[in-house]
Image 1 (cartoon, helix red, strand yellow):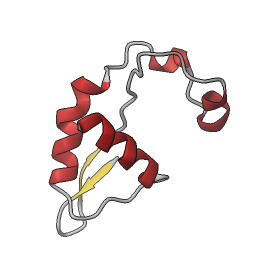
Image 2: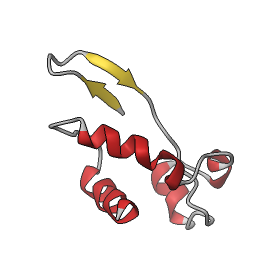
Image 3: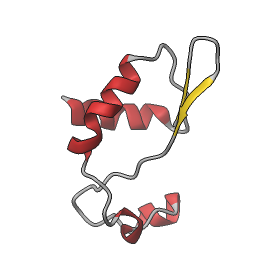
Image 4: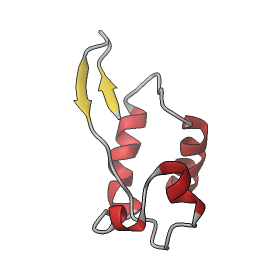
Amino acid sequence: YVVLNERGEEVERGEQFIQPGIPLPPDIPRITGITDEMLEGAPPFSVVAPRIRDLFASCTTAVGHNLPFDKRITDLELA
């Protein structure tokens, strides 16, 4: 992710793997390149949820790859 201020200046950049708590379905590594081994030690969603909530609450525009899917999953997890 990248966070920009109102002038379009970058103020934060990062990425975050999240431990789903279950093994990944076989097609996920093929589609994303992400493996179960890469998720070892990653925090569960409940740990990163407050930060994600704050990031979305502080922005007026969100841009990302496949963002509608990510938003649906995030909305379900935050409910």
